[in-house]
Length: 156
Length: 156
DNA sequence: TGAAAAGATGTTATAACATAACATCTTCGC
DNA sequence: GCGAAGATGTTATGTTATAACATCTTTTCA
Ligand SMILES: [Zn+2]
Ligand SMILES: [Zn+2]
Ligand SMILES: [Zn+2]
Ligand SMILES: [Zn+2]
Image 1 (cartoon, chains in turn brown, red, orange, cyan):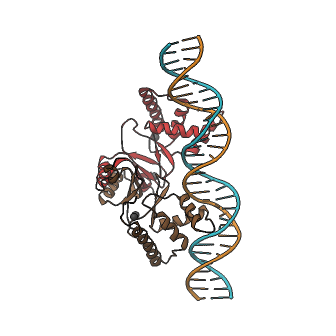
Image 2: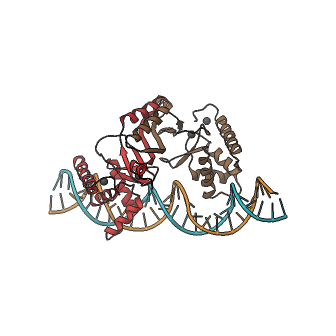
Image 3: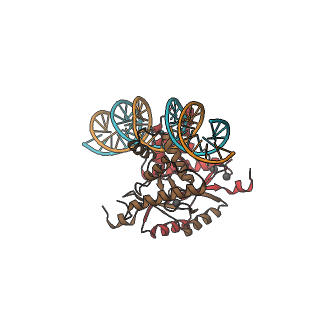
């Protein structure tokens, strides 16, 4: 289901990174933030805010409400731990938090998995293209839909 | 306000293109579709569906409802006459409909103007980046935020 | 011409996504 | 402990988008 062999490792690593980033920046990695990050990392598929909300309710006694989840997601985004995919209204865990990066996303239309990549060539290309219009890039949203390699090999 | 000298030309041209594309593909360029296209083209800033809805209400006797606007927008998108900007939940007129194209958008954070561009270099870059992961691109969403040339020259 | 079919729009209701505003609780530094 | 800052709870509502079904309009073609 997941493109990794041991997805537990992905989750553990993500939580460790959350811990570390908060510690080193003097912020709190609260229980809710941890749980939301964990839920975002349940798979390599994008997580929807309201699904996270539901799953929180299953675990918790008191059901969380939307602001709780959106606040946690915002915190995680601000700290580079998750990314928002505009084209899907969904969130995905960052595979290399901490590093400053312009990244792009490969979204498989078949299996739904998303992978995050960085390409300095692509970044340069984007800067160049913008520069030709005299445009200064501040941030970019690059979301590519198609077929991942596994789904290309095994056409359903 | 608009980056073009005579924005009426932009509008006229867009409507002409709509007419032409529908004619040649045997579809109907109905009154609503025309009006929505016209409203999307009111400026070079992204148009929100519910704003279009409001503006339709001002013109019309019977106020339109959301599905009417969304249907028209979907039709216009399917026919390459408008694009949806995922990062803004908004729509923008296509500057060169008819041509198959992978395009990207430069969104000025200051003035709000959006310009649509094509760059074969960027397209290639994107394909290459995806190919390195064995990914086959079907469609892409490239939305770049920053400062347009005019807003860089005249810092407010 | 005048039904049947296809296409478009109207209408109602609701789903899905997101935030404002204010109350309360928790943590931390002192 | 106490006050300030930070985090979460709570209520309400704003914003974006679609499902489902009714009606109307246009086209087709017998
Ligand atoms: Zn994994
Ligand atoms: Zn990342
Ligand atoms: Zn113009
Ligand atoms: Zn500008």
